[in-house]
Length: 340
Ligand SMILES: *Cc1c(COP(=O)(O)O)cnc(C)c1O
Image (tube, rainbow, N blue to C red; front, side):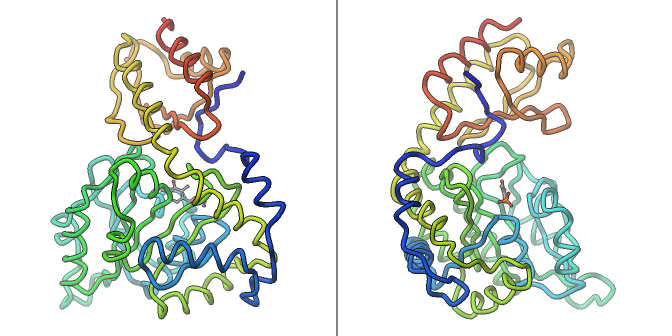
């Protein structure tokens, strides 16, 4: 039994999802004639109370399209120093949009309205880059699955309104936040100009991300998706997996959260652990005491068939997911408790 907690992207389609894939009705989505893609886009737009959704192959492409939509070359976007759009999209903001990132020193990947307001370039100053976009991440990835307080998101919206900035949400794991905090997706639809949601993380589809926005924005988004090489043909086979995930694999995220919280509790009791970050969703981030070398711990765990990721700066990360069973969970807790 291999316990693989490197990422929630490692899941394989469940039997029900495979059936949905095999029986999908498809057409050419470049002609907008794939009924399953159209249905997926309609359902997501409806769920979030937004006008239009567009299916993308990946979350990075969807985020990058959003950055392109909201900015002009030479502009600046504001995000947290750990943001995926800055750290893990291969410099795409610079490459695709000619945009610099003003990185804020947030709390577990979350930034405040006050810090954003302070970071905006003065409009009258033509020496500084023009700030045009704010990107938030919810839940945060490198920040350990932390969830924003929705009131703070509303404060950020107000700053964006006051300074005429676009507001994009990298919601790769937004469903985790919505389930964990029992939020209404439509509240998100009201405050963000664009939202990107991955179907390939906790929701368990093999691929896919949806980008949401109003009709005008999304009319431009489809063109940018084409420029990025992301217009696909009979992709309804994969959209069917996304629809299946939306109907069957969202509420169960609460199980992943429960298991992650239990891992955090067990880790917190171990003498070889220095710190476990607050665990709100399906990501557990922890540090070892100085006396235990990182490599030794990682090797010892690999020998016991336990895999997880090294995030750098001494941070280790375990992510719970659909394919992490109760049996694996019980075994992991045993391994962590008896390790010395
Ligand atoms: C995974 C992830 C993405 C998108 O990643 P892809 O691998 O390109 O689908 C974007 N933002 C965050 C926070 C993520 O965790």
